[in-house]
Length: 415
Image 1 (cartoon, rainbow, N blue to C red):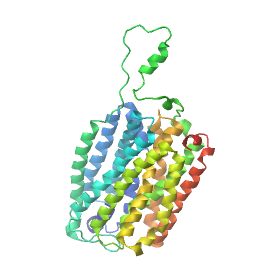
Image 2 (tube, rainbow, N blue to C red):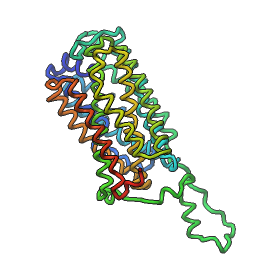
Image 3 (cartoon, rainbow, N blue to C red):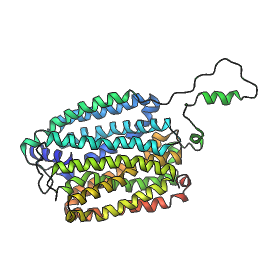
Image 4 (tube, rainbow, N blue to C red):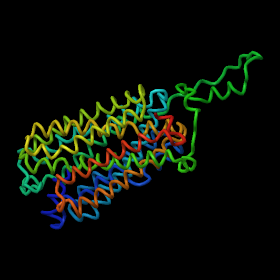
């Protein structure tokens, strides 16, 4: 969407807008500050369904309002499609993943991977839809990544309205099944033998049916977690992982279109990569359950460093090589969403997982701000080649950090 949005605003709203400015929008879409903390609070205060409804309503409303905002100013568009969308997305996502974990607390990696896969798989569906609505004739972009054809650009505002309708229908269906697992039925009035501890049995009846002993091993509140060096290791590692993932996710298309004049190919390539990313999220989660968070993330970050370091070679190797590198990098990126929620639960407990993960995810906000600033002020200076080389350092730093996590208080729980 970035090239379409930037191109429309340059031609109809604000000529000074560049693709680099638009990087601020996905930065706050995916990691609005405290959105996930708010999601944890709304889920515990009301119910998962109410919390998810609040998040979905904010997302759908923001998309619908964006059809108006994009025609008036970048600031208004940023508030609506960036901040408001990010707030709703954070609330809905953390509610979904924490609720799913409640159903299968002994398979945290796989469950969180499945939810994260759904989150990522949507891209494979909507990227071609967006392209077919806005650019059905497969018109090429300029070498700078902008579209200038009027017949293409006039379709951009109406795209948001159509997407809002689709989102609303899908979310309405999904909300029907969002709920916590059922609790055990109350005891009957039958007599209980003297050797049964009644207090323990009462506690047992108040637990969810799918609860297990693993949930009670460690239960840190957010204030306790913030005092742990383990949290800051995870925070730093997630900062590095989210930086490289956001950079590649947001700029792969503008980089590819600098030597590939086929917008439909880019959309289909993204769909293939998104499917691979979704499958990989489940795979990384399964690998974590079978081995450890440390092994899984170390593997993903090392591979990511290699792909990013060699990505500039695809300019000479052609579009099929670009597709291979795109899929490979997206597979590595899949580890980020699936693994860090797993590490949060294993290190700090299940009871406060939504709030705890909300504080951890603030690292993605900081990395997003850094990425947006670099893109806006330095991308034209350093170019894509040096940007990829510099970015390859970040997953390697995450590898170093995670390799040392066992020496922190809760680090041994994820090694």
